[in-house]
Length: 492
Image: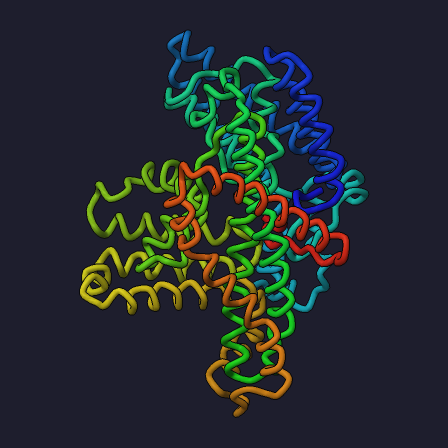
């Protein structure tokens, strides 16, 4: 089940909201959210919900044990629990997401496995897990993307942040399994983030105060995100699918790259807006996850604005523990390289994602070393062009899992076919031109800044309500009329 579906909009969300607000606050509302969240996940992943439940129970137990050892003044035992919890979390993520990548890589480099069919990965994996074979054979399929329970990268990182923060003393031990389960499984940000650290919502888990104003702002933000997803991302995705093969000529391929750049932003940022909006409907305030990244003037700035919660997680739990920038320039470069390789790998079980992470990491490092000083001397427009081009070419690495296809597409962009723009490609671009213009403008803070100037005006509030109703109507009409509703971040 996804937010941009009629089932969610017309059935699941109204029922959960009704139950939530009909029940008394103390205790019951978290229980409703926990049960509803597990049901939400089980709807699309009826078997994989057991993996999530295991993650909840394991990390809850780790927190309780660390709390106990802290009271008994046993730092060694406390650290041992942390190590075991982190290893189990990473092992679970590795087994269910990265097993095929490991064996496909072995097939490439180990002579005895070369030429073996894809099931070789499955066969070796079965031998490793032993008694679990019948269960895995029945319920999972090994694919190039892994045996991927939806959202496992998100909820695993959330659970890990909890146990690490408990170990550090940055947050208290949560003694209620229901409240902890609600935190890990909370459906608004379950399958696509933002990644919410427990210490950021600890007080809200019990002490949040729902209000009409907060609920209304949540509905507005959710509708904005829904419109980004359905009315923009889904539509430019159709254009990208038509131009991805490079048959429209060089100019059409550049437009196709722009279309994918817009698709992935509105797809993911729209989903994040929906998640934050849903959180507000239930009294939660989640931190912003996107801040108009395409207006950045450097790659470093881009990553302060794109997927903020993921960048924060890697900074807090990988970069700083490795030493950050405190041990000299050489060590800082090494730490950044590790973080960016892991950032790429987090996004998918394929080497193109690692290359994508290395691509961005390279420019971040160069900006740290010398390029950042040069950039500040450039005209602002050139800084924006530089940042956009890095992001756009990076998205090509992100989308094309096979390098020959990527090189073929890039070759078309730079004129390898000898065709600037085919007749069909030109007609297709013209038909999508209004949408592309709207999407480009909507990816900037222009509309938000204009609306901010109208704060306090009564007519502007009525206009907001009217626009929300119109947008929601168009979104529902689009869902009814078309079954095309892709979601890029399902793979994570």
